[in-house]
Image 1 (cartoon, rainbow, N blue to C red):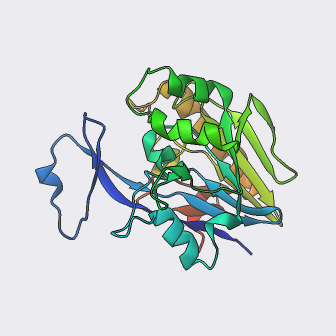
Image 2 (image 1 turned 45 degrees about the horizontal axis):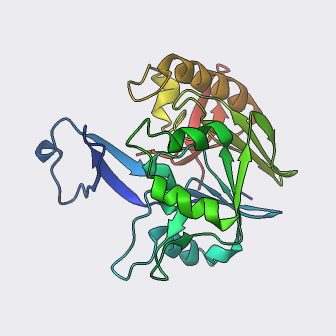
Length: 259
């Protein structure tokens, strides 16, 4: 049984200022936001035999009471934030790392106090270097003081179910994760494979550190994962958020939604 869930944080427009502005297509007109990208943000929760896993943490948006939307969505599924044992960070841009920390108690504290936060060492160092306004170092200060940070390098295992691999592409030290639990193999590609359309309309993205590498990686992941039946998690998808391949009569594969 598939036990992965989108913790959908919302839809946003992003212009050259790199600010994420909430966008409601039932009310807002994209024409009013020229030269903007429109993206969805889907952190994921996976139930594994070794505990709950979060894949990236969103922007850290809160409701009117100051409660993280991420926390509210976890509770709607019948769990508590303290049940989370691993937070897997593909990279540390603010739309992926904002929910690492919570202000619900009135002061900043780690959002998942019982979890290990898995981050590539090179990504952590780059986040502090000031090379990009996409990083919010005040968040990382809280994580570093928590004692929950686990810095990894290259490829390896978190536990018997979770493995990671440095892949670069979107940032120099971006990483992808494989979560094999029960009979399901989940693949989380972060911003190297953020939308399903990028598998079939493969292109070099201007927002990637190394767009050509990301393009090659997307094809490699689909080429390996489609015949093996991986379940793909798409962080910025506007269509299929959790998908798996289905073989066509001609031997090719299409992507179908997993619910």
